[in-house]
Length: 512
Image (cartoon, rainbow, N blue to C red; front, side):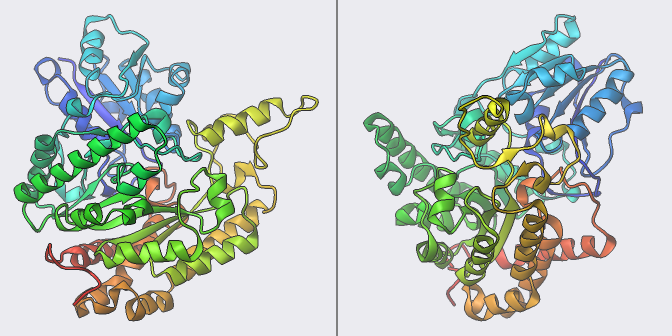
């Protein structure tokens, strides 16, 4: 009997995963078990893929992003050598559907695979497989639950649940609004609650809401929407979200907490922000700061974000509401200089944000920046051509080369080595023991219980060890395996983060 093998490629195998790759378990749910039995799950962050598990009659689904496509293509080659059928999907094939086929894949799935995957498997079994299947943007009510009963909970620190798909913004460095659309699509409340309760039964007390924007329709976002029709849609989504928050709070155990991703615009909506903490029990969130300067935000088409001290106040307001902020900051934007990065480092330290990540600018495929930069590269030799960007991409299909992020582009004002060193200084300075203790003394942690204050520096060290130089989006693309001591600190740090976050639902983290 043919079997389905679902593979999540990784550039290095660690033996555990910080964040569970949601797509694996959603596609497991979508697999027609009546035809092929339960799918075999292989997450390379935990264990390396073994080609000898594949038989010629098998169907192997490989999901890739741009960051781990090299690892994915390596698996593709090994599987084809065994004579099996390979289907590739994910963000990267959605943007470049021809590339996986060029590499040897039998078929490509673009967009969401929730609905179309069953047809793909049936066609593969019947010998009628097409080269391309368009999964499209699945409506919120049709997005599947993840099949968590095929997961070993001992191997994952944080499972992921999606509540809404799509993002109404159009940041130039982000591909979400290009691939997943600008119209938020709310999943069915019952499905979300059922998933979270299942994870609770499996022993998890902390879940990541894997939404690209958890607050797509706050009062501030609605107010700046120029289209009356879209403004009305956002108002409806806001009411729908608030109803969902209320139902969730009544149906999920009160000691199930969450981490998510959101924008600073949440501070414009006191009701929404309060409900995130009190109803959804969100205790930490990645917030896209990007830059503290007006020039930096203009370059990424995010001018609605606050700047300078206004950004500092926004961070403090979110943390005063009981939600720890993980500030996501980009180093190497078009407007950046060595001095501006150093100034940004100082702002981050003085802002009081409890966690921070400093990612190096990378023009990911699918983004507005990528298409403009590649067009500039293509036309650079033509007379009278004026490039749209001052940054220049140095290679075509650079994702197939083993390069550091600082070596992918030529910055107009910073050398690659200087950018690398300044970025490293940002990480080292923010996560130094001195700065961690300072945040405990004067920041949002000053009124934490003693045990939380003690464990916070360990959590900082763990985060620095896992994500230093990359950021949270780097799961699966790190090329090096952490050493023994690093893995020990990571495990202690994760326990520390859980301990810090597990407060009573009606508490505020900055209050006694």
